[in-house]
Picture (spheres, helix red, strand yellow):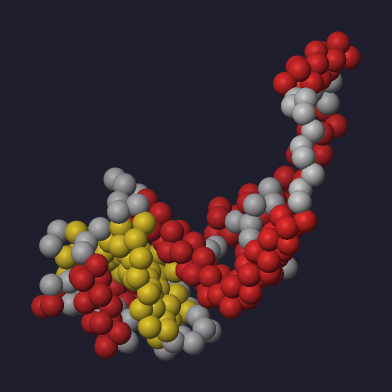
Length: 251
């Protein structure tokens, strides 16, 4: 059976496309996963073989000369004027101002960027689940049955509740992959529109709800009691906020 990390992070790690945080996360995983380590070694071997195969043809001298001649023909012939002293002073002042602003708002921007990236990944997972035949898991409105299904698959307690009386009917649940980890997803329905509630264990402190939108889908994210939640749907934002309050009060 393939590892979740092999499908979500391995190729990006090999190509150098992961952020520093995800690189550290994947390298910690590599210490304990022989499958990912073997796949990474196979990719290294394949790359070395392709480099040794010399599958490219170097340009001839005449071709290089013609290309260089074209660039020289379109290069500007006039030299730029020397910048005045006040130009340098203005640029230095602007850079100093930017540095001060970034020093004050930088940490918040990094948090916002991370949250936007995380929500984007969750929205993509939600969109994928809407495709025919892609959703796998359990289809049931019995919260105890759904709870028992999750107990055998995740290492944290999934707070399964059926809010049919409040207009949010429980339809079932599934597992998904977010940031290379397995997460639980509860599926609700509101006026015919599916709502996915992604949840996973976290060591981060509780936070109030943060909201946003992506690709026409609304999302709301919050943390409570060592759990992080993110609800996403094309339903109205007010509906997601109401579901957030119901989950928050019952968790």
